[in-house]
Image (cartoon, one colour):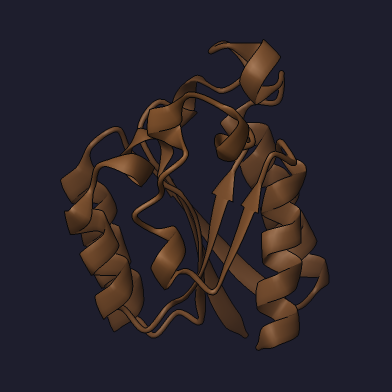
Length: 144
């Protein structure tokens, strides 16, 4: 059974409370439940992790890479635009990565339009709210 990591960065633990007009009313726990449930019906295992700390996210990428996970669904949050270290961890891993954003980062503030992750990701899903996570999962399973 293929394993996929679902990794969420800073402030995503506040989904459902933080700016629901931008990020939607669905909580991170609800997203994780939907993705893990769908993965199980598709014969895949998803492990979820969220942290507000860059180093913890990097450590998890290293762990999943060492455990030979197949793929990574990554919403780096605000680190999308700033973290060379997170980019390097993804790049050095063997994880087929889909970058996910709840909002359309290209239609937002200028500083949000540049992602350091997009260039090394296999695919990018933005602006589809929580549905983007499920599209990322389907993509990774189909590409397996």
